[in-house]
Figure 1 (cartoon, one colour):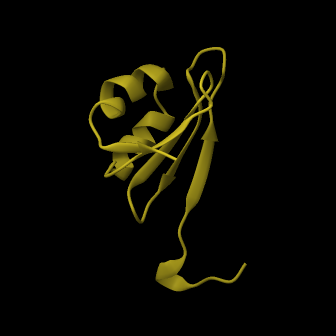
Figure 2 (figure 1 turned 90 degrees about the vertical axis):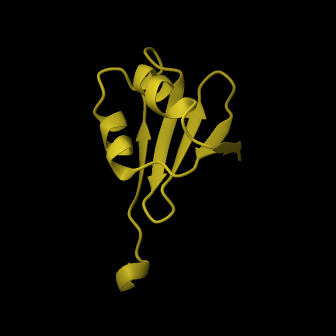
Length: 82
């Protein structure tokens, strides 16, 4: 992989346990501060805009990813379906 300095973005997809969570996967784009969330039941994917990196990091280490998402992200940021 060729490195392009400032243009290289770190992108990580976190897959969530289906039994305990409505989220199938979440990912984050550091450059645009966009969090992408895919839901198990509907299969729909939404992009939440302006989510701080620290909030995404906290989501990954939360005891309950679904509860954290609902409490801190779902109704707090603009979003659109992809």
